[in-house]
Length: 131
Image (cartoon, rainbow, N blue to C red; front, side, top):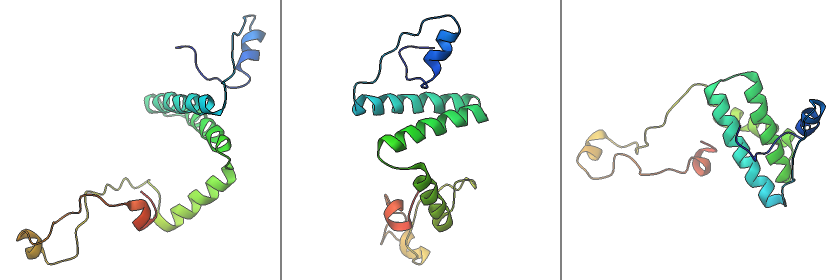
């Protein structure tokens, strides 16, 4: 376990209850706290990818909850907005991969080179409400 690292609030007491001494500091301001949370999210995602389980999913959720709160949002608003986006745009459970987008023109026009067959980039958030 590489140190230093962000830990849950009660871990120092668990260490001390185990007869050891926890040597800790507190993040110096919001900017450092956010940076540590981003690092923690990456750590927890890596652990979930290596071993998908409820415990690792819970750790990801807890880091997300801390990030949401530190940015002045509320988890119930996140859940409500996520539910709305699922209703409007669907979720990610089907594994659909967008390979490109082309105009709905006759194929011979695209083949003749009169227009590009695929757009270079499309802003899915702006155009369709999410990606």
